[in-house]
Image 1 (cartoon, helix red, strand yellow):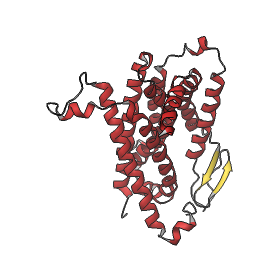
Image 2 (image 1 turned 90 degrees about the horizontal axis):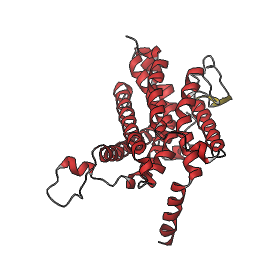
Image 3 (image 1 turned 90 degrees about the vertical axis):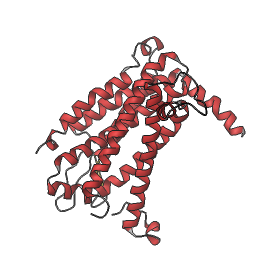
Image 4 (image 1 turned 120 degrees about the horizontal axis):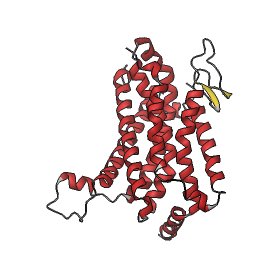
Length: 127
Length: 174
């Protein structure tokens, strides 16, 4: 019971912390942009080969007769890492600068990248 | 497939393991879909008065949920569903996508690729989503919270239906 009582103010404190707000805002805006760049430019942090369970750092092609190469895990890792770093760096900025970031961008940017991602998948939209 | 822990295979076979994992993934997705749909309805059509025991219709009750109460559950469900989905993805890439390609179901595959993209983007939105709902009385967050919740709900609906379509094309029993 005492844990619950202590956790509530802690959660409230994190929710109202300007540092966390800055991190979360920049993280939310950066994630769709970086992920889209990773997908379109093919920048995986690593490549996974499910047929052999091998992992290569960075981009690697499929190995002949050893199944496909998976880059999605690597794109995800690149995105979360880069967005996390940007979020942390943003917390070092002065508050008056951070306050100028419109909060609406946290939903407008992800919405805006969806048509770009659909376009990037144009190979599949065929009859 | 090396992504199945060996100790589990002492009790169940590989096929049963993937079936259980996929079923849990699907059930968690249903829970996430329900939670976000309720929350999105509550921000799009907020109920101005407390709903009593009688008098309110189904739609009113559907949207009369306490939004902040769903925030942590949505974050946890998204993360666990994502983790299970990422795990199943290895199996999909080897045993589902290749036959789909061979049969020429390109649009089905494209829809699934988009689902994977949205799952990652949604993951990046969770910290700010959590903050918006935990500090729900902050009027600065009202508009962004509303549209972010609606966007996440729409993404989950798309991902759920895309997964369902792929399962119909080549899921259980194929």
